[in-house]
Image (cartoon, rainbow, N blue to C red; front, side):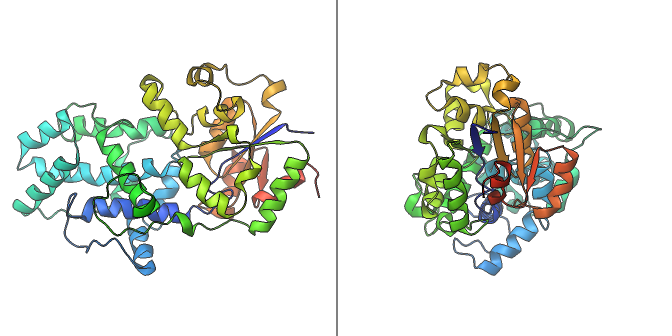
Length: 381
């Protein structure tokens, strides 16, 4: 058998990312226009947007998905990071305007922290001074300065510290994956995606129904089940390494009848990553494109954080080349290469078949039109 273990991403492999991208756009929209956050004018905030409104909001927030493609191309895989980056660009541009009339306030915020109270106060000052600021989402594509090399995830998440110093004249280390601002974006995304019924947090506004039950499979569900079942019957170990939290992984995969095919101690989610980062903040960030998610799936969830982080990588060929990682993104590819494992790219992610040239350029070991073609790798009919 060519591979002993296959570790799958979920979004862009089994499930369409469309609802997650929609949810990310709605989270940014709420942070900008919700009266409980910045409360900008120009949009009527509602917890029950129509499908037509969702399409419009996503087109505007992500500039016809140009912003999503830009982030994906730099290894940004988590929707929470997408919310944080997209919103914080607009916030930084707003702070630049507010600082002209409230310099002491903005300086204090940048040095002591930006929480929900600060966002509301910032919005109030914007209205009080009648500042004409309106979000311009196309600014995102020109906000980050890059030289020859593209910025990576960690550099992007912390880039706003550089903007604060150079653009606002305030030195800070406020902006990071562990900041209050990142956690606010994460929380708002969860409220939209899970809905009021499943969310474990007290809702800021009531009435969100959630999108977790509206997931779309990327191939005929029966064909996906048959594919996974055939691999399992051949004795292939099956695991998952996803940027979704546990509940967002379990519900849709159980709905599709896929969840039970995977080894429970090899199902690694963003929940595991966040718990590891909270317990060992000096190791953060541990999400993709870092290899931690897949290393945990390889060593199993019985392994400790230290064992995963301190594992010597890349793995020796006798081990690494017996593992296949299946994903749709550059983040998955980078994680696989850091582990020393082979990589199969699926053309069912954000850019679809247009991603083929990128994965050919990266020399992915396999390029699949969809996940069911993995059987060809194993010569299984």
